[in-house]
Image (tube, rainbow, N blue to C red):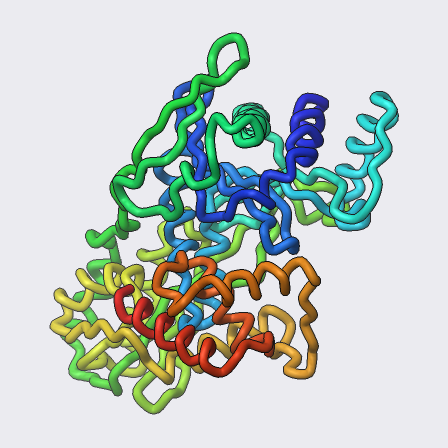
Length: 420
């Protein structure tokens, strides 16, 4: 870990996050040929970090996060956060580190005669994988990616200071074909600078040929028992499940990141819950959930219509619905499902959010947001991440903004949300 700490502390000295926004991506061609997409966070002064999104899978997870909408339920945007595939180096307070991280960092600082002063001075490394809790950085390849990304971003800061590049040379956004800066890691450890374009956006594909029990399905098909229509969804559970080999010693560092299961919820047209099942995403969740649905149909009757709200649920039920002659309806919005999922989400998160809790902005955050407000005009040229962050601050956190500007901000948010 010594090299990682060395590179992280060198990067922190650059304060690159004060020059660039988190929408100005940097590409790094790693020593094994993989392209990592670097997101530099911290311009608002709250969360200082460098995240590396390896390959197209990583980039796709960043794009999904980038197109968050403030109008989506909290658990939808939370799921996009959890489905990130990235390696992160953030700067935290010592008290925010795990005991094993504190020990490693203190040993490094002691052996190199380093004293860490002030808040957010301690490097913290994490691996984020889809359907897993953010976890300790253990894989040697991931460590190498982070080391190379930190080195490239430190070198980029030097090039900006020397005037070889300017901030305006770095494109903003994640659109297909966008030209961005590329740093290629050379054998001797230096970097070769050029540019590359962002690849095409790849939508997540879900299995449509779902296997289910033919015996159960045949029984439901022959059954004369009919029931009310269903509303169904499959979404990510916010509460982690420990791995079986880790449950004996929860207090110690676990060998693997706990997983976050998928939940299947079924309501009938009277808004009464029929079932709520959970399953690991890397298991055959579609088979497990559809077979539970078939058993429910045998017990309470087959619905004439099933309404779903996302692609995952639609593809899961598609083959079964066709076999049983059930109408499958895709709805962009379903009040009953959203209310049920909100209740489930908050109950697993530990209760409803405290409406009385005040969230305060640092002076640096306020200065940055006022800078955006004063220079943004009608907000049409603001990138999505800044636009929606400002909207959330103005509407959910009572950040004071002039009425005329707030009206323009809401108008632009509504326009872009309608395009997503």
